[in-house]
Length: 300
Image (cartoon, rainbow, N blue to C red; front, side, top):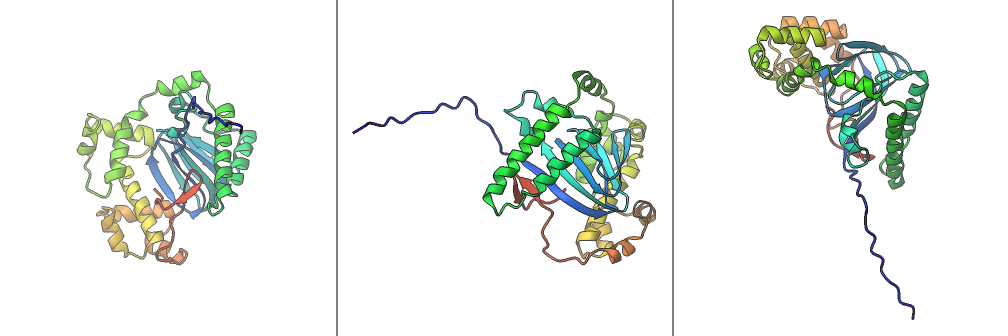
């Protein structure tokens, strides 16, 4: 009888694929996301409509078929101009761990040209076809498309070394990132300007100047914008009383709130709620994809 020998395969390299992404097709009206940052690459493709988009001190108006790429740890904001449909993909920098050297420092072109945008949109639309996790083979296809897409970014959309160095040499705006992060987590509570300034060891006056320079907003305007954004989400996704939503989001100056709300959305909260689609209790959150699988994590 022939003897069979078990072969021990030595793994030369291991790949860690345990990371979560956010991937969804969004259909929304007038949604506003104030300045924020995260350690993900964010790709947004506009299917229909217009979006006012800001990346640090750079402003864009995105229209049909436009694409914007937001690099990791860069502050940005967006405002939908009416009814907009778009595809959103957020990939953590950890996706490059173990498979691409210096992945954590790579920077991509923010506004690809028409040819590059077409490539990106084609990938994103194809990926949408395979997010049905009830079919196991879809998960494999989705992950393969995701890595093909990352390869496209690295080969066609990566910034040159000189332009990356230029970005890293500008540390001005990065100084207020800790303040933005703190305010994002605590905006429902009372936050004073001196308290915020102490986070980066500057005076209140200095923080005001920095905020105005890099976000085109005062600190108090930014704080109110965060509260309004959270209030709006509650208005559209719950049946809580407006007075309850105001209290939950730390809004005490109703005069300033209603002025800013109407400036952003063009209507009063009562009018916005009256025009929304019927709210269904226990409705599912918009999905976040984890390695091609839907997870019940909430939309940020």
